[in-house]
Image (tube, rainbow, N blue to C red; front, side):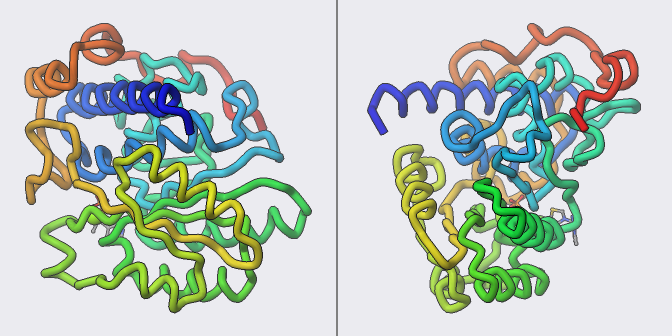
Length: 298
Ligand SMILES: Cc1ncc(C[n+]2csc(CCOP(=O)(O)OP(=O)(O)O)c2C)c(N)n1
Ligand SMILES: [Mg+2]
């Protein structure tokens, strides 16, 4: 990938980070830590890699994303809004009554959300089923899935891992957001996952390990995964929980934080100006009936 394109994607990632901080700050509480650690991968997927059409979210030939760590929904909403799936002012309706943007992803509410998630482990299994179904239909679509490291404590993740390798699901490219923290502590203390990449290799997956905040390295890993035949891919991303949000980064208590617009504005300013987030979005724009009929396209 050319240096100019990397710089452009980094600029988009910064906007997504700002929008997400603003979105959660406007509500007053949310999963800021795990939202910040997946900014780069979502930027790359939606603004470079995936075949998606914001005007036709349910295109049967699209690529799919299952955000199995569904509590990071706010980052995905900011990414989708920036891509044009829905207006940016919907972001200020996050998790309010009548919203189309609940705290965790819901495919029946939000244009561009491919799978309902939030119960850890389940989204990942659903991704295997979707990948199998698409390959049985003979479609060229790729299914991308993102799981958390704490989520990887769920036995269901490893059942799905065996199944995908057994069925040779090469149309499945998964990521682990290895931010080394889960709800109430470090993964090392709660249930040590290392060597995580060796585990995925042992389960028969084409496995790579990269810096999850390095756009060029991530892109290279996705290209290598796409070139694989006969097995699913896992990209273990070393990340930092809370990355880029000055009051949350690397804090052990950053899983689900209360903060308001004063802190949000300061964090956004630290990233370099108010840009798209902040007060520019205006008041409570609820994504309910007021926004018109069925925007899901099916
Ligand atoms: C089955 C299930 N159990 C518990 C929870 C509550 N919960 C939400 S997020 C979370 C921690 C997840 O940790 P991790 O996967 O590391 O997420 P991240 O660090 O990316 O935020 C927990 C226990 C849940 N959503 N689903
Ligand atoms: Mg984690």
